[in-house]
Amino acid sequence: MTTNLDALLAALYVFIDDHVAPCRRIGRPPKLTDAELLCLAVAQVLLGFPSARHWIRFAHARLGHLFRYLPQQSAYNKRLNAAGPLISQVIEALARQVPTWHDDLRLIDSTPCPALPPARPPNAPNWQAMPDTASAAAIPVSSGACGSTC
Image 1 (cartoon, rainbow, N blue to C red):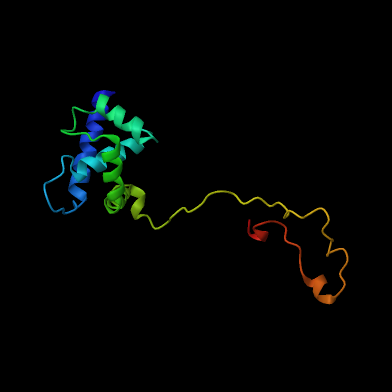
Image 2: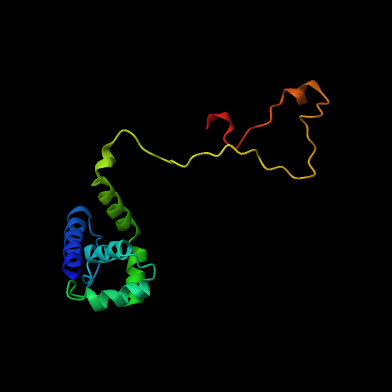
């Protein structure tokens, strides 16, 4: 698994380095480049590490040979929080590589809409059973949250 992970991170680093413009900074260059930082962030998400503390510990143990410098947790969090625009560039560049990006059809939500009657309080009067005026009799009771379009 290590060789596959190494190949994935190498390909990810090359992709990010080619598609993301680095931030220009004043002063000496950082030990960890923007492409390396973003590669670590994407790998953290892909490998399912919700905690930065656990991810940095894993990266030091298993990925240290791939990066010339790995920051500690606080430095990683500071750099990652400051790299918001770069992260959105990476997300967009990766999304454009998916074949369905160029499709004309976009699937927004495929959740079926249930046809349940709306919830009523137990003490609410039944206006449909007792129409007092002509306008009250003309108001239909909805058959569900989505109406009749489901």
